Length: 230
Ligand code: CTP
Image (cartoon, rainbow, N blue to C red; front, side, top):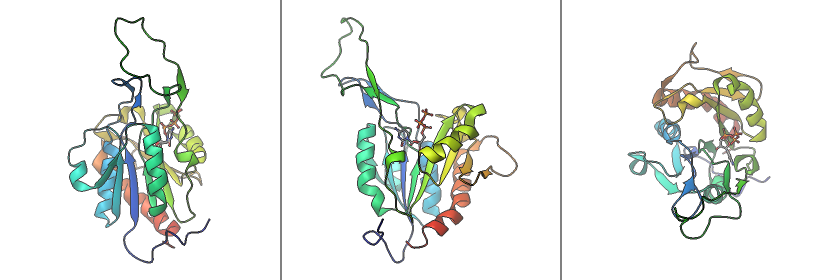
């Protein structure tokens, strides 16, 4: 694929960071969501900005103080919104950090109009899968994609390796379920050549801000190499 229409000769690397959950509407007042706080994406964005990168955020519904004062932020509610924003923005960036926790299902056929009443018979909700976003995203050879995986502890590495291929990512930041909506992370970085990076000697938990600094530092050489034509 041609890179000429979006290449730049010099200047800071451009990072696009997605974070937070998606809310898939049930009716006009209810949704299907998840417990993602958006914190890991926010900390990675801050760490990237400290390296001099230009950072833009695509944020789902979350309450991160300082998010809007620190970054250019576009908001999404559901996976379809996120997919639209990403499709528009990604060609103009070098690095994608796909930390958003995308819902897996939504109401089949779209949201139910109005408000389902409590005195109605309890509804049976028919669900359909949410379309895969990252695995279907078009990227250039000089763009770098960081996927995420949230897994039960004993399945972290096997699932991350599976997702690395399915998501067409350059690496996967793999976390155990315990990191959800928590101040700490036990992230490891899984690469296509079977390498697994852990912080120092430890695979234990540390503050997300520290883990984010480590992640940005750990992936920067590979980003520099892949995006060298930027
Ligand atoms: N993701 C995506 N589109 C989806 C679901 C997830 O782009 N419809 C992305 C997430 O942003 C993340 C990665 O895929 O970077 C892995 O997300 P995760 O929720 O761990 O995995 P799923 O693909 O949803 O699979 P499962 O829920 O079965 O683990």
